[in-house]
Image (cartoon, rainbow, N blue to C red):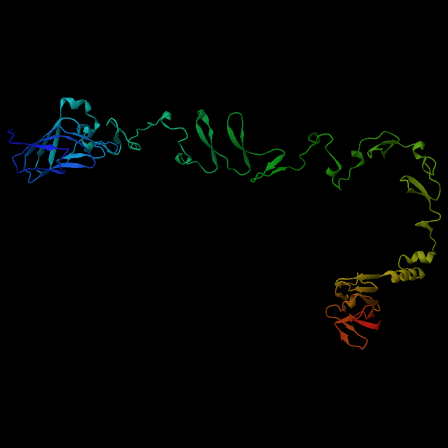
Length: 455
């Protein structure tokens, strides 16, 4: 092949892109000089390419670039459509470009001194996956990129324990686990799923495995964790000595004599100086405070508790009430069962003298709480008294009202009923006017209280 002409390309001063004119007699170029790339640069053909056309490059330049992005560096030199690999940017080589009718084929012929630098980046880009490999920024040697290995690159069982970083496997990376289950050591020491969600079950070890079982025996457990002791489950052996006190006994416990500690003959339960029950001796010495002989009560005597708190006798032939002798005829005593006599008259007289009350706030009176007289004390404010239903009170019952204090006092009839004043007019209420003023009313036993007179 005859070389017609050469053309020099100084990469340090050249204006990129450099165009190679195909219709000129120049078919060989010599690249030299030094350049640090700050952008991608190209050397491109210009003109009409013909089948079999050849262009040669004697590459002797020194071009530098970082290699953090790909095997071609952050920035690249492209000759006739083909990027020059990073390892050749600063090495001598012959570049042979041949047109095949549709595209330029570029061949790189390294010099002897560049052969040791041949690395993975010299592989045809069409068969090298740029997403999995990256060049080391210092040496240019290609390594697997971070996150460059995916599922398709990994062989079955390729990832070993040592390759997994401690604390790197999150819960999200685990296979699905049935809801309510936990991971336990199973057969052959392999992890296994154990369901722990059965209602009211607990997890417990049986010496071999962890199992989920229901609670049984003296207690039961609910799904919310509440533990209940079963009926009749607490036995005598379970009660610590000295722990059972009176508060533990039900008021309806009804402790039978057979359940009490056995007493020896001639012994009775007595209280000792500490207030506890103990066995006492029933003999004459312990009965000397009684007005009886041992084992025998005197005629017409009754047993009572004396002022000293001891058992004593009482003569019942002459009964007394609060220290006063009580006498009554048979008729008067019989009246206590419902008869009529002076005995009842005396009781009524006493009751009539004392059955009164003072009120200073609004009060509603019923037949059961009705008094014979009322003092309506208005010293701190007005006072209203509502009468009971007349039909619930005995006919001819008389009630008196007296006003006290400087405020108004009002007597109000029961709902739906009335009070008849001295003029015969039926009104819903009557006022007690002036301190010391008042009136008396009488019940007709139906629905009206009538005023007898004013005071």
